[in-house]
Length: 159
View (cartoon, one colour):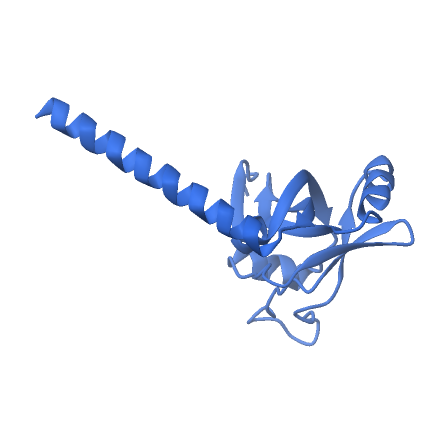
C-alpha cells in the first residue's frame, strides 16, 4: 500500500475562531485506538464541544466526538472518551503557565491526517466578550463589501 502524504482535513471548529482570540497554535499528535482511526478515515468527527486540559504534566483532549466504527465489534471505543495529546515537554510546561492566567484556555481548531498520522491543531485562546464578537462580524462584513465593490468596478472597466 502506498504511503499517504499531505494534509487531509477531517473536522474543523469554526466556532472557536468566533468565540475566542487565538493567541498561539500547536500541532499535537493523538493517542487513538484502531476503531477510532477507522472512523476518522471515514471523515466522521466533531470538535464542537471539545477542549484540552493539562493534568499531571500531560495534555488531554476532552469532549471530542468520534462516532463508533460501524463495522466495529466489542473492541469499539466510546465516542466521547478523553484522548491523550502528544506534545513536547517544553510545550506542555509553557502551556501550563499560560493556561493558569485568567481567561486562557486550550481549544481544538482542526482534526486532520498529516502524512497518514492523526493530528489536532490546538490553540491557546482567550475568550471574547460579546462586543468583540460583534466588532469582528462588522469588520468581516465591511471587508466583504469592499471586495464586492472593487470587483464590480473592475468588471465595469473591462466592459
